[in-house]
Image (cartoon, rainbow, N blue to C red):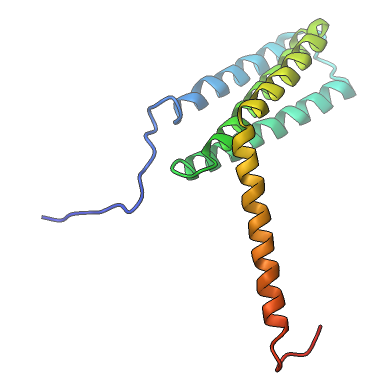
Length: 158
């Protein structure tokens, strides 16, 4: 009998953190895009709509990249930071498309996104602190290695 051993845990794609969240997110994006096309005001898009759609595309790409990092860091220390970035990108993309659909409530949607950003960063403050400390230690370690290599007698200074 052939036995296959996988050295790392694979993420379960059917749980709340897996691919199911992409289904509702991209369905919502598709529905909002269809509503935008049906509105008579958006048949002749302005520069503002172009900028908002560009920011929405960037937010969707940020969601995709942070979701990939979230899956990659599933067992890591900074999994929650990637999850928070993905959540913020989803909220921003949907809010931007809603701004085009219902332009009279743009200030409410953007202030809600700002408050959501503040809440997510507040809840992840300990993980951000650990990340900053890890980066600081990594930079200090690389500087120490650079100084010890530069002090060898056979090397010329650069």
